[in-house]
Length: 327
Ligand SMILES: Nc1ncnc2c1ncn2[C@@H]1O[C@H](COP(=O)(O)OP(=O)(O)OP(=O)(O)O)[C@@H](O)[C@H]1O
Image 1 (cartoon, protein in one colour):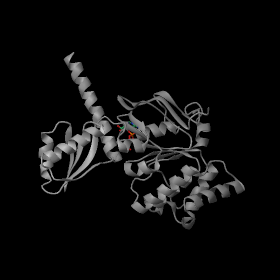
Image 2: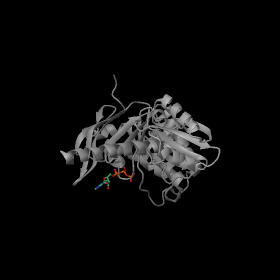
Image 3: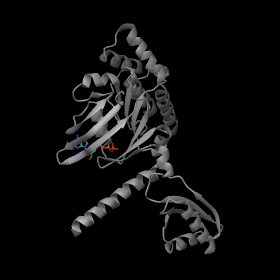
Image 4: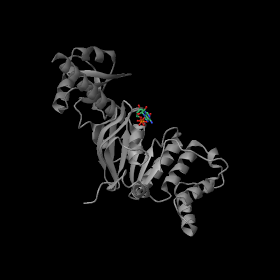
């Protein structure tokens, strides 16, 4: 059986007393797109830098296609494309010269070099920009150049740190399109982003990180339907009139919480995933005189899922602390 495209085993990175990455273990299979999600400072860039051979783990290990990133960095770099969140640029260098410079640095010569540069320019739609100065491009064009640069050696695995940050909606759609093409070509893509809704559309799996630890690794669909959650199930409820009555009613109803009040009612959380229980709650609403005109299960968006998972974890940690304090 072939090794996964990316594997991390108990990866740790400390900066002095701060543990930025705290024992991460995960695998990303070949040909899949994995989204890496976490709040600011959660440890995403540090993790990505380690698996891209740009930083050393304090302990633990990581492999790209089965090759250890610390022991064989040069081999790993042949297999890996790295797209950082910020990248340095040069003055007075056109887009074409910039890519050619990188192709030379990677050791390509003659016709092969021309071919590699031409291929990435076509792929990232850079041909119309060939003579533009590379440090005078828009953010979207710069990201396409950065993607083109990371693809010159046609890597199997692409690691992208916040590629969509700062892009306008059109540039984001273009970037998503390019990522989709790469995924269809069978590349493995590990991508961090704060824009969770977009990640959900393009990722086969999502890896959530909080304070340097993995808090969830699963597919986007199960996160949205909440089939793997213990935090209850969300329903949109609308009333024909007096929507505020719903909040009053929920206060006195066990297993029901108001998740978000809305113009015509609320999104409620039923703390039991059994649909029979939801039917009982609807029957109780009607019996209690609420004029319900809409009652349907709502998919969580990925932001909700992330917040649910992190707050569940916080509750567990708080409970553990209380138990420890009482012992
Ligand atoms: N070189 C460094 N020296 C000291 N601390 C660092 C260093 N690099 C990162 N950190 C700290 O490690 C933690 C994780 O940072 P990291 O950049 O990996 O987070 P992130 O999830 O990528 O955040 P963001 O979404 O804001 O980019 C932060 O507390 C950060 O301040």
